[in-house]
Amino acid sequence: KAGVTQTPRYLIKTRGQQVTLSCSPISGHRSVSWYQQTPGQGLQFLFEYFSETQRNKGNFPGRFSGRQFSNSRSEMNVSTLELGDSALYLCASSLGAGWSYEQYFGPGTRLTVT
Amino acid sequence: SQQGEEDPQALSIQEGENATMNCSYKTSINNLQWYRQNSGRGLVHLILIRSNEREKHSGRLRVTLDTSKKSSSLLITASRAADTASYFCATDASGGSNYKLTFGKGTLLTVNP
Image 1 (cartoon, one colour):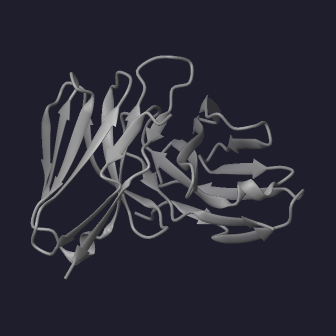
Image 2 (cartoon, rainbow over the protein chains, first blue to last red; image 1 turned 30 degrees about the horizontal axis):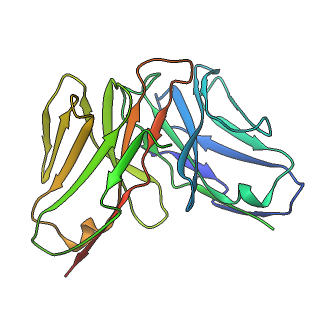
């Protein structure tokens, strides 16, 4: 079974631009969650989606948004990029909603904002 | 502040030795998970232990959970150079409106050949 895939793997953007990251979950997984990882803050939860509905959201500004499609694929959008948005963005998929299931992580998208 | 905090922040051992990492958390949980991350890559799930379990094994890994002390430990026995990675504990929060999986800052384990 193919693992979680994330595209693109690397991205360089300029302050003020917007970016869309994509995540394809493992076949059969209906839950997708997103995380931001930085050296200073570590891994921080962004959102959780299940069956196209956002179930939980982390403490991030409204510039961070996401959605999930009927095939469980998910996208994350960051508008008006700031230097502090430079990070590794990880998505994870799991069989069910909530945190009683193991999360399968993708390789991440490394975003650099200049 | 972090829900889960790993200790120590860094650990360096020789191949063949055992490695023990600890995780403390603040609020009640339904389950606790341990993950491994190799050098800036995605995380790999190691073990999930539920709040009503005290110990769990998987190969060379042993996880304990003490809900009265709000702590967990991960033991890697007979370590190998390939075990070099960052190890994270992740906890859910059993209540509240912001129900999320919270990761600690991790323990960086270096296994020297």
